Length: 88
Image 1 (tube, helix red, strand yellow):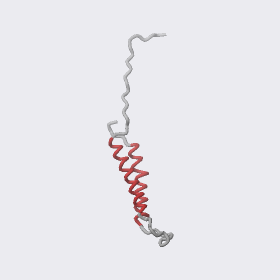
Image 2 (cartoon, rainbow, N blue to C red):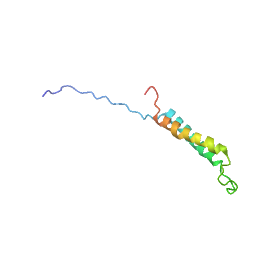
Image 3 (cartoon, rainbow, N blue to C red):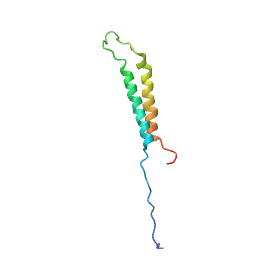
Image 4 (spheres, rainbow, N blue to C red):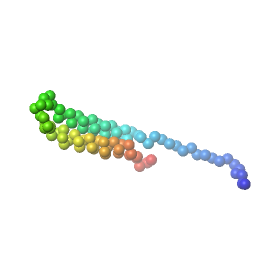
């Protein structure tokens, strides 16, 4: 059995939290898109539901709101969670 003489140097591995300022900004944009999507969906609400039975009274809520929600949930929020800068 060979015994190692001398001191072994253990270098400490520097670990930093990979969620930086750019990720936080992207996450805030994604949450903002989701909130705007739900707000756009609320524009279809009416005071008199009997007058608009089974009819959407606002096409903005039918077209733009789902697009905003899909972009927010499926693109921007995952991008914010998985994005890393080139230097790391």
